[in-house]
Image (cartoon, rainbow, N blue to C red; front, side, top):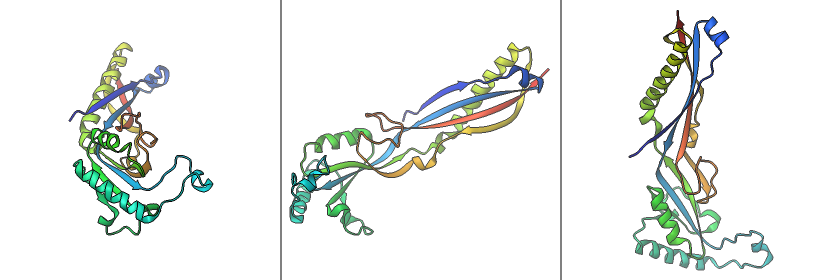
Length: 224
């Protein structure tokens, strides 16, 4: 599986202060782009007008519960016919009722391609509302070593180049401090969001990947 590592290095050097104190500091930022490993798509059966006021102005009349149950049965048959695995609230022992008293289905998907196929298949279906319910992303722990190695190599190369230009020699690392980071809570989060409206993730309308940023300040000793 392809992993994308993007690197942007920013060097901030104060020649007066740094060299007088025999050190040089390099600030490096890096990022990992994580792909979703599991996408849960939730479908509610019912009437969901784009204008919520319509429910109260008489423009839309609420159907009977039996109507929604019948539509849920039709939807279940449709999903089964198209080889889409799904589960409903009845399959969850911890659910009490249904959201807004609506029959609810959950579809577990692995990729954005699968998600787009489901959305395209159901987008013209009446009496349903579909939205991303949960996204689980790759664990960054598997790529930490590669990321740290890349950061240190780039920082050392840039610091060494500056030291040579200044007529000095680069010494050992004196201090490494993380100056920025990522919020682990964003990696796995439950949230109700339509396919193209989520702002919780750094994504475009056609990209559900999540970018985690890391930033470090690395101080090197300067030798005569």
